Length: 483
Image (tube, rainbow, N blue to C red):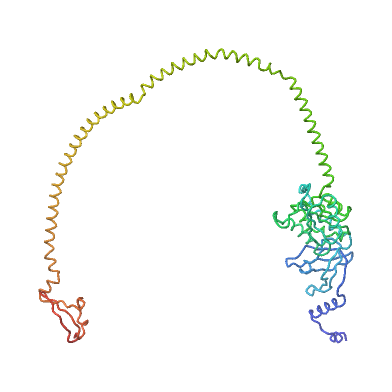
């Protein structure tokens, strides 16, 4: 009986049963929201998809986030973090298991966000992004101030109003969204864009940046906790003031910025000094400079009067020089006579020396020297001519001897060549075609004068010339060659 009942059951293939279960799960549950703790999270797979599980105290469900969805998530899963996942329940037939395909992910309450924020803060701090040594000093009076904030909120109006009250400056606003999806990327691009401005351009490069937002909840301020914003603030080469939220609000950009302001208005107060206070300080310093200068002049006048009273009278000053002048005038006459006598003696001595060096004396010396050189030159010329004549005589005799020897050698060479030539003459006659013609043969030539060597080359009617030893005659071929 049991066998009969079992035979009436419908047969299912494994694929059919898996497909039916899959359709039932997807049709019964559709989209669901589940809350639990992330476990087994290891980051994206090499394919870009993300696989992990969500568990609570008594159960666990597999979860998957496809690559395209994961890239759009504002909130990323982390191991041990409590989350709320929205997605579609389905099954995975190859493992006979069910899973949730997540389409949206958010933290489960403020505690989860704070845990994620603390973990991110510790990691970025370990990288040195919050190191005080990286902080830059703010310029005392910036010429241009760049503000990264929403252009429609009260924050930008508060900043501009406070700057106008304290010290008006040129302000450039880079409008961004300060919360919501994509806001973190806009804020980071704004900071990087200000830093990328060239020094000389139509838009002046700011000397100071203010990143500002009004107060809000932790979720509202979350964009300023994103890693991309924190890194952009830490890498800014322009000094940066973070003014996010109220005084009690703290975001990660506060640690990376060069200065944290409790409010956007406080950021404007940090950015510039009070113009009226500077003017007052300038006037006070000017007054102090004038007073110091006047006191210095008065002291110098007093010192000058004391020095004037200590000076001797003019007669006392010139008394000793006057006596020295009288003494010198008495000694001057005797000194002039002695000096004139010394110069007269020296002049006489120079006159005698000058006579010796006069042109007439030097010319007489040169004439005597030239006469001596002429005599030596005549003797040297005679000796050179005699020596050259003897050399030419020897060379002439040597030339005559060489000429005789050359003539004898040339005669012997000519005789040998003549003998050799006479010996070659009979051989030339025996090899010449003229000798062949003299023996009764004839040379056959074509009209161009080229020899005809074969009878086959002659056709009937061809003209030719027959050359004999004593002359030539023209001929015409009457027939072709015969074998």
